[in-house]
Amino acid sequence: MQKRYGGFVRSNYLCVVLCLVAIVNAEDPYRFFTWNVTYGDIYPMGVLQQGILINGQFPGPEIYSVTNDNLIINVFNNLPEPFLISWNGIQQRRNSYQDGVYGTNCPIPPGQNFTYKLQVKDQIGSFYYFPSLGFQKAAGGYGAIKILSRPRIPVPFPDPADDYSILIGDAYSTNHTRLEKIMDLGWRLPFPDGILINGRGDGGVSYNVEQGKTYRLRISNVGLQNSLNFRIENHTMTLVEVEGTHTVQTSLSSLDIHVGQSYSVLVTADQPPQDYYIAVSSRFTSQNLNTTAILRYSNSGKAVSGTPPPPIDTDITWSLNQARSIRTNLTASGPRPNPQGSYHYGQINITRTIKITGSASIIDRKQRYNVNGVSFIQADTPLKLADYFNISGVFKVGSIPDVPTNQNPYLDTSVMGADFRDFIEIVFENRENIMQSWHLDGYSFFVVGMDGGIWSDTSRNDYNLIDAVSRSTVQVYPKSWTAIYVALDNVGMWNIRNEFWVRQYLGEQFYLRVYSPVMSIRDEYLLPENALLCGQAVGKKS
Ligand SMILES: *[C@@H]1O[C@H](CO)[C@@H](O)[C@H](O)[C@H]1NC(C)=O
Ligand SMILES: *[C@@H]1O[C@H](CO)[C@@H](O)[C@H](O)[C@H]1NC(C)=O
Ligand SMILES: *[C@@H]1O[C@H](CO)[C@@H](O)[C@H](O)[C@H]1NC(C)=O
Ligand SMILES: *[C@@H]1O[C@H](CO)[C@@H](O)[C@H](O)[C@H]1NC(C)=O
Ligand SMILES: *[C@@H]1O[C@H](CO)[C@@H](O)[C@H](O)[C@H]1NC(C)=O
Ligand SMILES: *[C@@H]1O[C@H](CO)[C@@H](O)[C@H](O)[C@H]1NC(C)=O
Ligand SMILES: *[C@@H]1O[C@H](CO)[C@@H](O)[C@H](O)[C@H]1NC(C)=O
Ligand SMILES: *[C@@H]1O[C@H](CO)[C@@H](O)[C@H](O)[C@H]1NC(C)=O
Image (cartoon, rainbow, N blue to C red):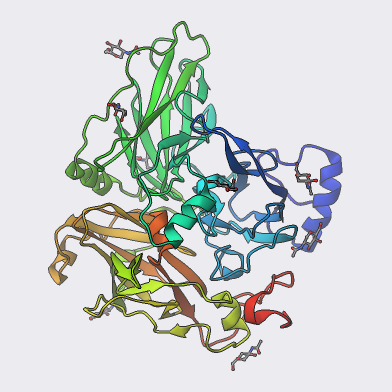
């Protein structure tokens, strides 16, 4: 019989169902989910809104999993509009068909369903899912994903007394269809109206702790644009994990979490028994958003009072230094028993350097955003399907340059080609006065350098080639650069985007087509049998 972890199988009935599946695939356990996606009333900022609920919940249900689990998630779209879910940081190895962005999947039409078949292969850590179409992310539909280590793989800290997912993010009181309309007209969106913690406004959530015990908090910024600072009144936090990397454990009084990012901290309830503020506020913007949740001791004798703790350091240099101080614990295990430091990324020769500059531009009198001068527009057919079925004319590999150019920005369905097994360097250059936060689907990458000013070849001299963290979303500070190394070991069509959602929506994204000339399921799975077909792929046979 298949060994199962985490107390997932609790009844014999479940075992009858699951053990049958286990015979089909003797390797890795399965977890099944059925999700009903509907609109429902939510009051995130005291104002009634139609939120996107999953099984009646906002945020959606948390996915609990263990390294290598197969997650079979049947999503029923009961919204009156198309819907897709993407899995931020889940690598979908050899399987970009499950990535759930419009470049890889047809939207699930209203009243229909699609079953995602994911595997959290060789991953641990904290991630989240979210609706990827349009501006649906502003309406909810997101939730946390936890991937625990397998039981025999050591984790570099004792089991916490509990493990809470905390989804934080800025939000609007205007609904997502209205926001889309504003952007489609080419106008600028107003600044968000507030910050939510697990879908609630100020003081709306509390986390219960027992004095003397230590808790793991997994915090993800699921918001739309703002970098957020997270802190707990009179408590220090110990950073332990960043998007699947166990970090050198450092003590923090506050932590900056940029849009799209996830971190785990440990917090010990070591203060007098009462309630404490958990405070979250926006960073580096002229307008200030903030909100609170409550850390409640079980024997609490006092409610919170007075003002929540303000952010201690507000400048970019502090934040940059904090980011650079986050290191991989080389001797700790990751998803496998061997130490995380056993892969010597710093000794591999780079085969290509790509420079990415995101910027704003007006095209056809509308507000747009672009990458290296190309503002991404969706094609009528998911790019991955066009690729699979050899449908020409949907996109062109090479429709975005490797480096910024001086050309006038233009619209295109931009796809950059890359070779399977290349080891590349990507330099994100931010020439603007705002924060950027870049995400690469299908991969995690090493964050080797980050600094103010303009990147040059000599910037490489200061790269961290020893213990940089491997993650999937990285910030780029205003008028600064960030450099990453990526081993292109995952064939597929992968979205690269600014997680600043207006910018993503209006063109600041493209696809990286990682290509292997050998058509083998060792490198890439076949199109799944249940794949939805749309656009020019309608009627093709999978
Ligand atoms: C989904 O939820 C809606 C609204 O509660 C309900 O009408 C519908 O029957 C549900 N569908 C499924 C498949 O559970
Ligand atoms: C959003 O608000 C507009 C009015 O501003 C309304 O017409 C529309 O139905 C709303 N959409 C949703 C999904 O609630
Ligand atoms: C829709 O759900 C049914 C089970 O209710 C399942 O058999 C079918 O494969 C699902 N469709 C897709 C496209 O995944
Ligand atoms: C690094 O991981 C090792 C092995 O699990 C652990 O013993 C050690 O405490 C960790 N060190 C730091 C500084 O996090
Ligand atoms: C936090 O600690 C300070 C300094 O010890 C103390 O003055 C303050 O009352 C504490 N705050 C709460 C809410 O207990
Ligand atoms: C929270 O926001 C309000 C209104 O913008 C501001 O007055 C207050 O100073 C902020 N508080 C903190 C702790 O940043
Ligand atoms: C990297 O390149 C250098 C020369 O540019 C070469 O000497 C070295 O062997 C290469 N290393 C690997 C691991 O290929
Ligand atoms: C697409 O073209 C490739 C190479 O020409 C071929 O191997 C493959 O079978 C074609 N795929 C389909 C679905 O026709």
